[in-house]
Length: 352
Ligand SMILES: [Zn+2]
Image 1: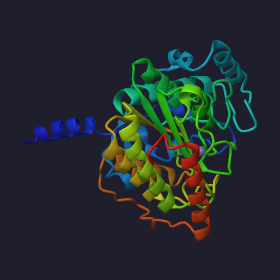
Image 2 (image 1 turned 30 degrees about the horizontal axis):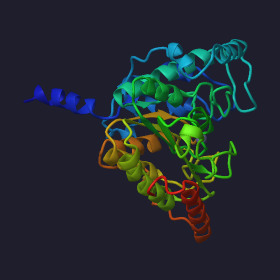
Image 3 (image 1 turned 90 degrees about the vertical axis):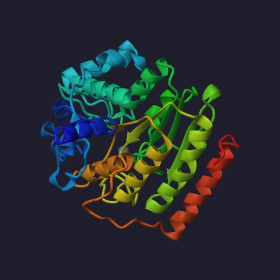
């Protein structure tokens, strides 16, 4: 019996969402930038699978074995774009005012892509940097060099899989939206603060041509809290399961919507991330995730853990024990009027 327990544990862990990590993700860095290696160092010694002592009850493992994903770049990017990023990195040139490179950035970003592909293969959480969801087909921006999740989605599409992308980072996933704007094999949903960087993500951005209605934007006013954020997703997600029937769910998991994040003014707590995790695991079988934003290094590991506990149906023993937040009346009025508009724009295509 004693020998059986570890075997049983391994078998059960196989079905859990685990972390994918490589310490190369620490080597992309620039002085004073919020998108910094400390974001991952905050998780503790990931090489030793020691994810912070206070989230030790999280049963997920840390898996290595990530390959350099350079060979997957051409699923989304042309040679010219790839060469530009490679050269910028070699010369340590900034790609825009927000988006730096150092001489390791190209290689690090390729490994992040490799981790995203591996996550898609085995339903894991790619704990990666740099993030990807702002990178469009021809522009690196918003700290992002290559769009990790978009590359993984293309890889899945090539294998005949239909993908639902849910992007709950506090910023709009403009890059992912743009890449899949005219196709229906990827349904892109983003919930984000609006107005905020990068200025896109209005309800009237719904896709074009074959992709019409396959982009869903939920622009949340500043100070939107747990109540509204989770409520709208709990209405839409079961509809997407029923109507779209995706083979795989790809999560752009950004945590800068947390109330203590320095970059945005959303008012979310760990409760949102835990509830979204539960919601997804109740509705879908194949789910993988890529880390996007989240810049408060003290809360980021707890946000990620809360999400994983939700996905893995683990009892939530969250360190901060944060109170679920409620939106003020004016925020609620604005949010509801935007949702009404969203439904009109989608013209009854989706039953939400
Ligand atoms: Zn963000």
